[in-house]
Every structure is written in C-alpha cells, then in structure tokens.
Amino acid sequence: MNQQNSCSIQGRIGFLGAGSITECIVAGLLKKNLLTPEQILLTNRNNQERLAQLAETFGVKVTTDKREVGRTADILILAIKPKDAAEAIMELRGSLHPGQLVISVIAGVSTALIEEWLGISCPIIRTMPNTSAAVGLSATALACNRHVSEEQFRIASRLLEAIGKVYKVKEEELDIVTGLSGSGPAYIYYLVEAMIAAGTKGGLSPEVSRQLTLQTVLGAAHMLLDTNQDPALLRRQVTSPGGTTQAGVEVLESYQFKEAVISAILRATERSRELGEQYR
Image 1 (cartoon, rainbow, N blue to C red):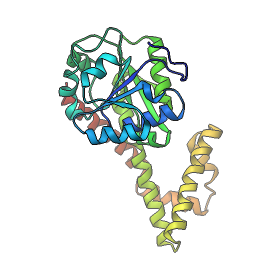
Image 2 (spheres, rainbow, N blue to C red):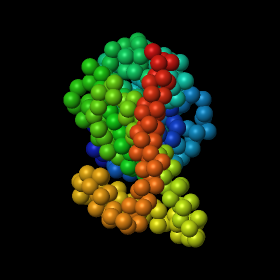
Image 3 (cartoon, rainbow, N blue to C red):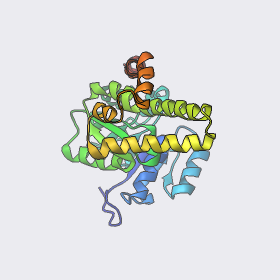
C-alpha cells in the first residue's frame, strides 16, 4: 500500500455503493482521522447526484467507473443492496488484484458466493453493522473466509471501529447476529415508543415523556456496561416486593414480554436465512 503520513491506515479504500452505511463509515473514518479524503474512492450503480453530494460533503473522490475502484483500491468495501449484488460484483471481474481485501456489508450473501461472482479467490470479510453506525455506536460483527490474514482482520477491525464496537464471529453465526443486533435497534425503538405513549397517556407532555424515557434507557444501558452485572440481577435490585416496579413487571410477564422478544429475534434470524437462500 502507498504510504500516507497524515492518517492511521495506509492505502486507498474503495466503496461499491454509496448509500447510508457507506456514508456512516466514511464519516467515521474521517472523524477519527483514520483516512484522508484523498484515500477514499466511491462509486454506485448510476446515481451521479448522490456521488456528487458525498464528494461535496466529505471531499472524497468519486467515479462512475466501477472497474477503476476494483483496480485501484487496496481495500474494497461492497455496500450494495442484495438484489443488485450479483450484477454489480460480476462487473468487477478481472479488475481485482491478488491479496486485495474485500469487505462485504451485503446481507445474506456468503463469502463463497462473492468469490464465485468475482471469479477469483481472495480474502473476504462479511460484516453486519446496525443503524447505530450513524452515531458511531454500531454493534458490528465480522466473519472471515479462509484467505483472510490476521493483519487484514486487524485492519478491517480498525476500519469498522470507526462506527462502533467490533466482534468476530463465524460466518454461520451472521444470521443470528442479524436477528439480534442488526435488527435490534428497532426493538429498542418499539419499546421507547410504548414508554413515551404511556407517559403521555398518564398526563405528561409528549416532550417531557420523551426526555424521561430516553434518559431512562440511556441510564439503564450505562448501568449494564459500567457495572457488568447480569441484567436479571439489576432488574431484581429495582423490583421491591409489592412495589410499583413489581406491579409493572407482572403486567409484562402476563403478556409474555420476554418470550415475545426472544421470538422476534429468532424470527428475524429465520428471515435472514430465508433471504440468504435466494442467493445460494
């Protein structure tokens, strides 16, 4: 890779796809000074207006030539929709070079299938960020194929730590990762919706109800992180016998709240597998 003295990661990073996850990753990399704008090259299917917007916002380089990205990038990040993946990736055939690291954020598409579409055996890392990447707090899982070296995994981890925490998993575990942390923010937002609605129904203004709910969720998350205590223990500590919390928890239990959350995560996991089968 070419040397760049003003940043932490060397070489050029190319993105195939210029959607929201690409924007989150680029913003994180630049904010943390891991790359300079000149090291980043973006392309997408055919939306030149979107490319121009990102070029203006971040000062990065853009191109409409996908094969240029394949030829010149030291690390190629595939950030395209699954339905467009086969056609877009096969356009890169013959443009990649040996040892070039490919990082995929395409849901449901295996590393083996990406290799097949590229027509070359190469190091590929599949990753599953979540939407909290937009605020630098994604829970991001990484799974490697057999060609990925320890150094390449380290570099990929540093890149994706720009948008949150990184965890290494086996590729076959990515479906449950999708159901748990990939879809997870939606479950939290659903709970927050309900809490705000309850506060408002009980007489609070919508704004006060919102602020109290958000601070409660934030505080609970920090308690879990800072104390490293089992969530069941923390729950019991705030649930006095015969008190208000116990009354509320009993209602949740009557609606099988825990079972509903577990079922939701496992159904999302199953759906991830179903979607993946379309590309195998």
